[in-house]
Image (cartoon, rainbow, N blue to C red; front, side, top):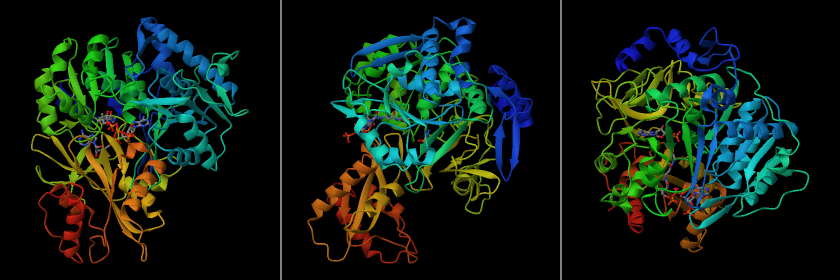
Length: 629
Ligand code: COA
Ligand code: AMP
């Protein structure tokens, strides 16, 4: 079946379509029904089935002839370490770690926070949780202690699995002080921390609470796979929303197994046994779906890469890994390719490696600009597929289904909606837009299997965030259009979310931190265009009356506050002191106009602006740091 026929067959009978796709999963009790309508626009998939995620990602491959196949390739250009773990070894290691969790009192439904760098043990920790039905929540290493504390309080974990450190180029990120600080700050108290001591930096353990990764496994029985209900949460992954409180996206077990398995062949065009590599981090959704679960469920070999696109050691790292490990499909963020292109515009490094095994490059996480796509296409001589999705969906909403039928690429478009997604472009009143007209991108309910059924402990927030603006639809938060051939174009966010180096961040959260500065009366954070990172945050602060400290001191404190409270990942480097912020007559800050001024783009003076003269003040302030030219 080609793309159109497949999409049509899903539309004709979604229930039959998703039951058919479910046959690729090994069930303890197969589903008798795919969709469960829980009323009030809430849906679940395969709720009456029994299944285990770890069994499908690991054990079944050992039983079905893949015991000696490499499951995980670990390649760390930062430490120089390289190793392979077969499916049989992975099974032993995961069962043992799961046994350690059980010995620490962790059982089905308990939450476990994982705070780990890019080492295979991070995947083992996720799979060990899945094995016993514990719900993991992985926290990205670039967040500060405060962000970790917020997540501890929200998901109330029984245990935390962490490493002694992560490695950034030229810098050891000590995790333990961050972990201890977060536990200290959190009101929820954690019983146990299992700590992986890395040779690069070992940490002290807190007596009675912390236990060494290896010691925890001594004398424990390997844990068997615990069957869970299809709608049992596999994990919670926090993502940025409009406010400082991150949203706990819930992923239900069965739907994510079925959907991810479907994508491996149909989108990424790999067969079981092939090597698949997503150069991301386990802390992001790409890491969950395409470093850990997707490739393993499908019987692929996955690559855990602890490095950066450039500087570890050079802009040829990606191509070296692809050649050395015979990667068939490669997935990364556009920003990573921009970083490579900037260092190696002529693609000299590409010529040094044999990339004949590579079929295609997949880009997602932020808008893929045409220059970057064209450069990669020309230099690699391979198709480059942009695809669009979100933490909430867990996999592609719109992409090029290369394994099903490679559709013609239109540069600037992530191509077409995947089966399961009925995508509409709506105007503010919820009316459908014509082809080529800009509007909010919404998806007709129900969302397909594998997407979020709700937010953790926050169903009301789930409704408010996604279901109320356009009744009967899921609001994606993205704006864009669809052309007459059904190709989608993603243009901008409709909320306060910005995308910095493929990392999703909330300007609202940054504003909350700046507003906490004792000298700041009012503030705004906007995402301005950045040639490398896509967007970059800039803060504007108005000082309280009577404050006459040097502005440079205050802005430096603002930068430090965000690094300390959100983390280095926010990449917040610039704040400006201004007298006033541009607002509408009703008091709404004109952030979009400020972005246009910073980017030097044309804009229409908002009709509702209170005092247009403020825009000149903003322009002048921006010019002092090289913007608004
Ligand atoms: N742990 C601790 N700190 C981290 C971190 C982690 N896992 N990841 C990033 N950071 C830090 C960086 O060290 C940097 O700190 P600094 O301000 O002290 O320099 C800061 O967070 C910002 O990092 P980043 O935005 O990654 O910028 P960079 O300048 O270090 O690197 C790129 C630029 C383009 C090379 C890099 O952003 C990159 O590899 N991007 C790809 C992103 C990606 O794969 N995203 C996945 C989404 S699909
Ligand atoms: P995240 O939840 O971190 O994956 O971020 C999701 C958001 O990133 C989306 O809502 C978009 O705003 C943006 N995004 C992801 N992929 C693309 C893409 N291919 N093109 C444009 N924007 C994208």
